[in-house]
Length: 135
Image (cartoon, rainbow, N blue to C red; front, top):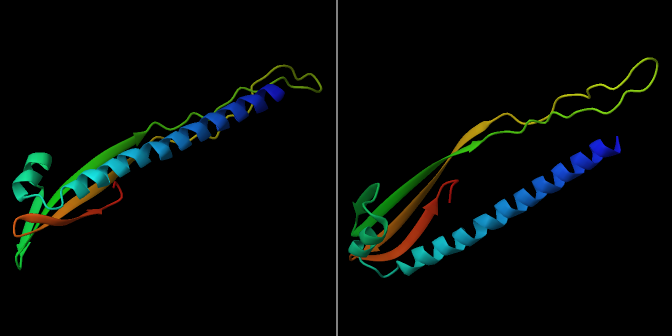
């Protein structure tokens, strides 16, 4: 029984470490992205095109130009098995055997999208915005 509890504790500890690394791993690119986008303020539309390529969408109204870049990412999580081998049985004629099976998570697919939009006035970037669950 102690062996099973130890295995579960190790699994929970590893899952916690992976979760912390996942959260902190997102923080650095997020700061870098904001720094890059902020560096574009004051740049011309040509500089935006050189840096980010042809926009997915653009729109002009009342002297303002909006250049939007849409990034979609598909994510796959293979899931977890969750089964476990049991210990030894005790009692009337019961010997070594298998423990319970169960738990785990099924594989999952998800899609996240981030839209980066630059606003230009007189051919100069005046602001930028991010929209979506993948930003």
